[in-house]
Image 1: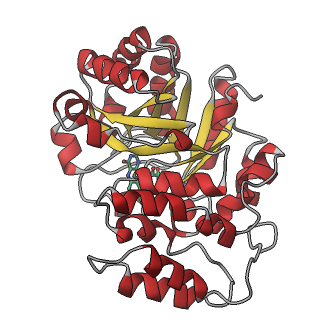
Image 2 (image 1 turned 30 degrees about the vertical axis):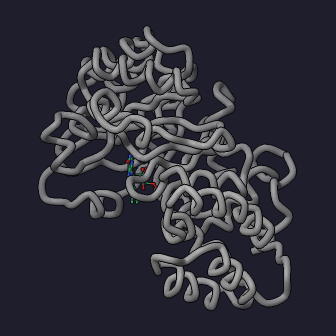
Length: 334
Ligand SMILES: Cc1cc2nc3c(=O)[nH]c(=O)nc-3n(C[C@H](O)[C@H](O)[C@H](O)COP(=O)(O)O)c2cc1C
């Protein structure tokens, strides 16, 4: 059933969250999860501050870039630039419902234009050798998810897309905010299972509402991969069990604390390059689960790491608030 092992477990693209610091941090917890950038528009790749927008650390591999756009030639050129920079996959966003995105005629509103999505995928595939994938919804507004999702899959398959990642709920383009669109429309995993049955040769990745790794594992009987978003970000301690539970490999760090300590050289390097401490450690606030001192760790960072001159000492002081040395709390222990 496994077509594309890279997708067995992925951490979702999340604007303002999965920046390069976040991805580097998550990589201290799992070697195997596929990590995604925030959505970057094709226009920004072509005309923006490319070096800043697309910067990543080699340790982040495997790392996928998510593009937003609907113009095949621009997406193809943006994809080529990303592939040349070494990104391991190019993903097209067909799921974001924000107004800004709708004005640009991309994101979730492309659910209504599967032929155009196919053209975009085909154009990107023609320019890059890395996998090209699509992340979509079940449908938008009053679309029938049975038809809309199959139409999208037909287009992706015809264009030789490498995987379809499905956020298993509809999006309402009018009336719901982007945040409400992540919670209010009901999840329908069965629709995604039917998709996989109907397209056995297409790698299908399930996304939406997965809260624990045990849940992710059980989904793998029915789909090729699972993508976890908010739970991975808010409760990163869960990621420490990704490699053993989903890939049968040892953890990259013996404990969440060891993973935090492994961030120290990176933090020092980035601070030397004028990055603010908080820009990095804000992603780490939820790292410690059921560890005595976790609250003091979080509070110290929230209060002290925001100060302009905060440095590695601030981080080390926060770590020292943990009681009892290395603890090994992940999903398996929880
Ligand atoms: C803060 C935030 C930002 C997001 N930004 C993106 C994005 O840039 N591209 C995208 O495809 N999905 C984005 N999403 C949606 C997630 O990728 C994912 O589909 C959604 O959160 C459902 O998965 P979850 O229930 O595991 O969080 C975002 C979600 C959140 C919470």
